[in-house]
Structures are given as structure tokens and as C-alpha cells.
Image (tube, rainbow, N blue to C red):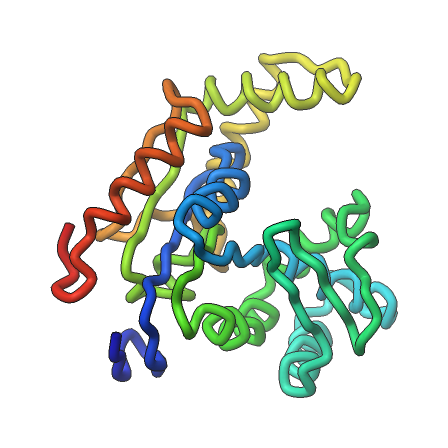
Length: 245
């Protein structure tokens, strides 16, 4: 599959498609993307791990999360020097910084919070844009996020906007937290979901929005397996030579 310069960047030669999945928080994008990649025999690229890894390195370097200029410079240096390496294997994502594995640190709660803060800066997102595109350059990849189909890969072969009603997403979140032994209120959780949707849609950097050519998948009444089957069917029905489904 040949690619020329389109959408503001040079797409390299690739034989298999790029799948982009965007959608609101709590829609199940990560687990669906991972299972869809497994179903198709593709690689799931965990873009969240990129920002968590960067947040960890920034914290170790003593850079504040509210210093976009220094953060952007650090991110650019890491990309230019190839200091971060990612292994997106079937068993999960492994991350290395200067050869040392840092995977175990990336799920710490304070790193997750820091990742959310640093990824809100355009200087940081711009620095990692080419890295994400490089990771998907050969195709056969599934990406998920907030701006994959609109910014990172505007010419992705197949785009999905995975969503579910705020009520359903709140119920799923409550169930998830309760299994961890946490006591949560459905009303409070629903309010948080609605507030997150509003903030994500209104933010200046990487706002939540559906790409015009993205297929909407509403998983409100679907299980994870049913969602994956539906999306896999859509991918397999796509005519990659002519860009039609």
C-alpha cells in the first residue's frame, strides 16, 4: 500500500492498515483496542504509555507539570535521542528509558495524574506526534485516544468513534471501582463523567471530537466481545485499495 504526502505529513509505504479509535473517557477504548488488535493480528499501540513514560521521566528530572516550555524541550530531546523505547507485545506494553525498564512505575496513581497534566500541553503533544506516526508507519496497528483520527492519523485507513451513554459509562465505572473495594456513588460518578465529557470537548489542546469519516460505535447495549466483533467485521469489509467499506 503506497502512501504520499497527505494530511500534512509523509506517510511511508505500508502494506496493512492503520486503525484509529477515538471516544470519550470510560467508553472502553483501551480494552476494545487491545482485543481488536489481537483479533486482527495487529499491534495495539498504547499511546497512553507514551505520556505516562514521559511524565515519569519529567518527574525524575524535576520538571514541573505546569512548565510547558521545559516539558516540550525535554520531550523533543527524548524523541530526538531515541531515549524512550516501547515494546507493544501481546503480553502488554513494556517501556524502557535509556535501556532501563520503567514499566512498573507507569501505573502508579501519581504518574497517571502527572501524565494527564503534561499531555494537556501542546508543546508536549507536538513533540510526540512524529513518534506516534513512526510507530504506526508500517500499518497493522490499532491506536486509541482522543485525537488519533483527527490529528495523529487524519488519513488512517479505518476510524472509529467508540462511545456509550454517560449513564452506562458511569455504571461501568462504579462496577470497576466496587470490584476494587471502593465505595462510590452512581450519581457522583455520573456527574464526574458528564463533567469530564464537557472539559474534554472544550479543551484547547486535543479536544474530544469525532472525525467526519469515523464510524460511530455505540457500545451502550453491547458487551466488550460484541463490540470487538462488530468493529472487526467493519475492518474486514473495508476496501483498502479504494478507501470504501
